[in-house]
Image (cartoon, rainbow, N blue to C red; front, side, top):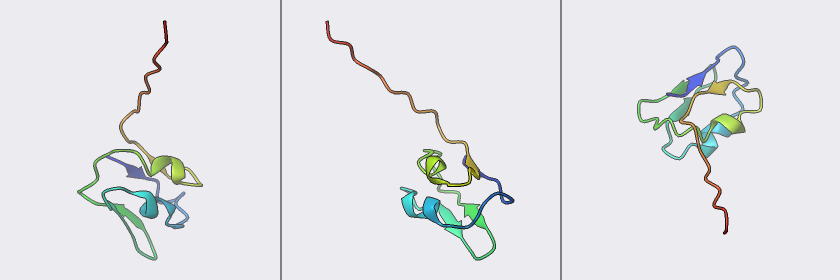
Length: 66
């Protein structure tokens, strides 16, 4: 599950705009992670202040040519 550091969050809304399942809800006072969060982690790198953490680790496979 994605975690929000409420003290660090600047409520810019960038994460809300990129969340594929629309699992982030922002009010004027706080950002909430909704139960439909898939823990994809897509929102984490978009946070300009690093207030989001978590998400499944993404592994990239590099295929070598013989």
